Length: 203
Image 1: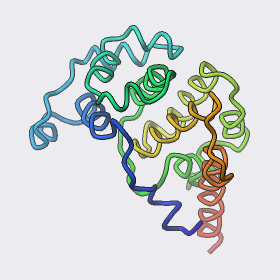
Image 2 (image 1 turned 90 degrees about the horizontal axis):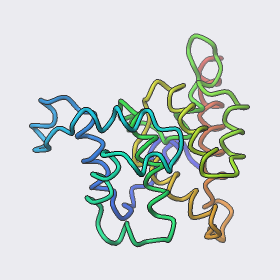
Image 3 (image 1 turned 45 degrees about the vertical axis):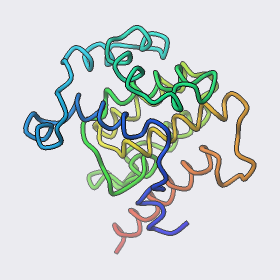
Image 4 (image 1 turned 180 degrees about the vertical axis):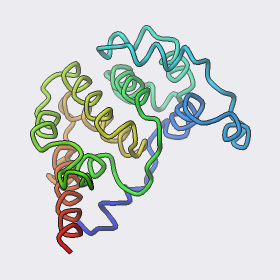
């Protein structure tokens, strides 16, 4: 994997990507930015409710999730039997993302070296705990913690693809090629970002 591949996630769109971005922008961007994009601001209760949720099931009962779900194309809602739970996880986690980082993938943002500590912003232990999540509830909790650790700054689409892919794999639809699996892709991005950052620090 090259530096370009690590820092610029794949651009192939997934079903519902445009609707997701508009939903997240409506909750996050300033009024001036939303006016320029011709997007109506979301009620503040959307983010407030979502941030209080502790499980994907709790997200299902929020106004913010309903707004997202009903705004998705049919191809996204009907894609898999577990699609609603996957999108609920995505909605809850994205409520903690406050700034879009287009320069690196989600996992690379976790592995980025902190200039003050010369260590990854998310420790290897925390990252491995995310990789080892065995249930949607544990996956949700781990993601919440890590997004907070990077101060709510990450690549929204990269995070979304990872979450949707994790659910596919969790329910038995893993890619045949090992390098296409979420755990492998996240590990490559995380460790490459950490190694690259340490190399720059030594220089």
